[in-house]
Length: 232
Image (cartoon, rainbow, N blue to C red; front, side, top):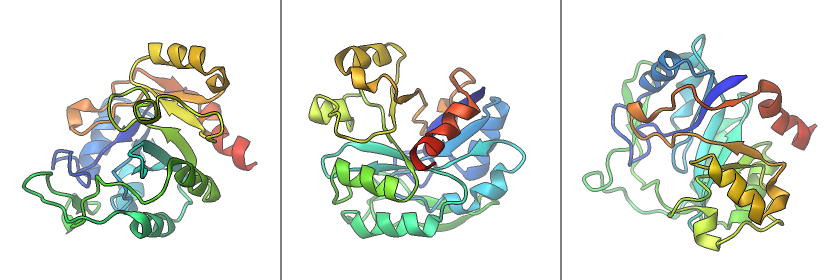
């Protein structure tokens, strides 16, 4: 079994603390004895290029990103290590609805190297929508061998339940992220077809102290099986 936190924001996300550097995140996960993490910044994977170097020998990882749809639904996309980050970033850049970031209001959007040195700063505001629907984003994730998970599905903002007041069976989602265990039972009672989806409880950490304790587990077989079942 693997203790996980698959929803962590680095300082590239404007709503995160500036000390959410790669080394700080990885070392906190290591100290908390997590087995696998995903850094999931808003609409960008630019922070992930140096993650393999920083994480080596400390914690497993998958590449992640939190994508906001045109309807303002948040979808977590996970990709395996051999996925090309350039392709993912090109897609995100192509559809992000552009607005300059006001760093004094929203915060900085720093990009770090493996030594936690700032090497760049994203000037476009990342907490905007992509000009794509929920269905289009899910389809793109699958076309590029990723796994799609509805983020914080029962939350009052940016969730599938808040925006659509339901989860349509035709949406080919792989998993559901919730914030409380009871939400799984509630959603399955309402939508029995969700029973066989993957279920996650992650931190949505924007500060180091928010990164999950070793509380929630998934087997390695079940987690990586999400890719095997979809892609063979």
